[in-house]
Amino acid sequence: MMAKNRVVSVEKLVEVKREFGFPNDFLVRIVSTHPEYFRLHGLPGEGQSYLELVSCNEEFGKSVIERRAEEESRLMGINVRPAFEWKLPPGFFFKKEMREWVRDWMELPYISPYEDVSHLDPASPEMEKRMVGVFHELLSLSIYKRVPVPILGKVCEDFRYSNGFTSVFTRHSGIFYMSLKGGIQTTMLREAYKGEELVDLDPLCEIKNKFVEMLEVGWRERAEKLRMRRGGVGKDMEILAARNKELRCDEQNTEKLAE
Image 1 (spheres, one colour):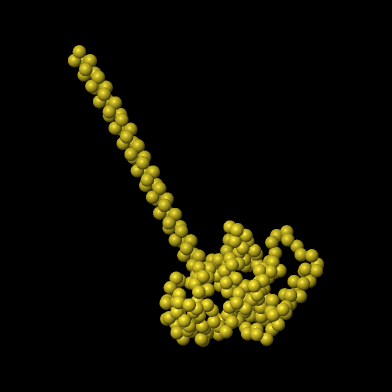
Image 2 (cartoon, helix red, strand yellow):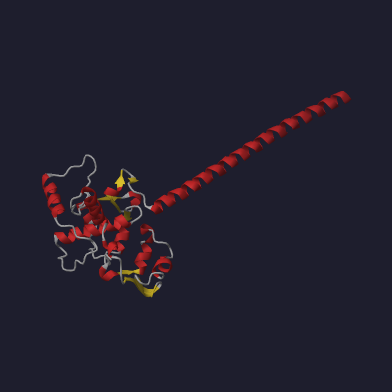
């Protein structure tokens, strides 16, 4: 729904499937079983192919920020305007001019990433706010609330943001965080993390963590069995050595008596 003309390259979807938790066979398991929502153009692996969204549930067209505002409105009994969370790291302060710029930018109306923005000037502050909304939504939909910048670059044309989009992450450092860990530029959603830990684990993360725990338990049990087995072999060797020593002593005593 965020993509231009509701069409995305299949090859690009395959490249980002890990970040967003798509199954390896998503074209078969999801796309082909829901023809009421999706239409596949072309054959994947044989030239260009595209996935088109032909219809959708309007509820799916609400961003994470809009849903959060609706929930806060319901709980507080007042109308809460959709807005980004601005969260700076401890000890980090803006100069007065920057604080004023952030304040003015935050007061601009929120533009949903699912809205049609073809009428907006690409260089306008409103378009920049929409672009921030697109990245916020993409990161919110990802499993770990972080995506390598090169991955985002693969879909810049589909989601209508410029090739110089990385400046958005530094200009809005209260919303995003840029990491260079492992030599790869990765952008993260600040509000999704408390320190280095995710605030809300994606269900797929929980499944993966449980699977890793099971593997660790299995490796520990295997290591313990090997240790016990080696310990048992060592004891057997000690007993055998003691018996051999006794036999040699008996043989020597027998020889002395025979003399």
